[in-house]
Image (cartoon, rainbow, N blue to C red; front, side, top):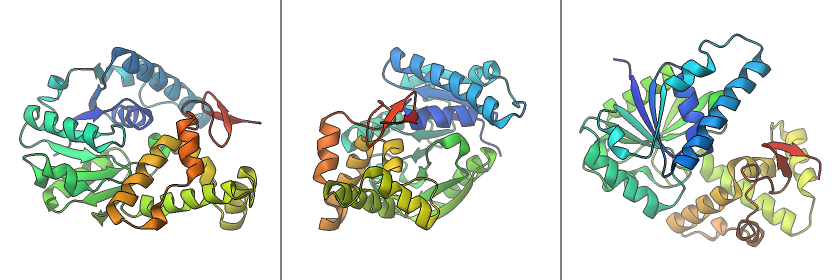
Length: 291
């Protein structure tokens, strides 16, 4: 049976992309965050994204921006989740914050509601451990930007059942996404590899082996990557990169995950990448500009 209603926790970059994609594929969406100001910005971003998507694709949209937005309820009230079938959580990569969200959702949502953690590195089994439904907790690692990325990494926690996995895959199929299921491990497959690559690229920059531009050009020119590791870091957000590296370091207790001092310094300085206009490159409205 198709999933009709989906809750999305967190109206940041990932939550905005998820809410938009779900609404465009016919789902009723409840997008939650802590303030009306954040939600108003999210609505503005979704409206802009829909306009730009139509402009670049040249195709007539299946739903107008107005009709897409009608499918999204913007709210700060967790009680709006009391009849939701499926929830995808996208809060900042801080365990104490995420833990409190799962505990709150667990008391409000029906027992059959599935919780999906869209996390960069935190093990999925840990999320299940703070709920009364560990069998219905799963990882769904979406990539940014959500509307155009075709694949999602699905993570099976220790208690996650096959029925939960099938429901998650069904939702992704409804969204037009392919998926691959992997077992639980901090960082899973994609971020366990990618965060190491990005962190080492930052060490190379710190050691003055090459400029940021040349590091990225080498990855694109030699390996055919669409983006270099430092461009990717800016897109994800340097603060998110640091949180993820810290989680990997904590879980594996391995020095290879030691965050580069330059990364820490940039995050302390508020250089978070595309999201606030300055990282390894400069950005205006999310678009890279000449430095």
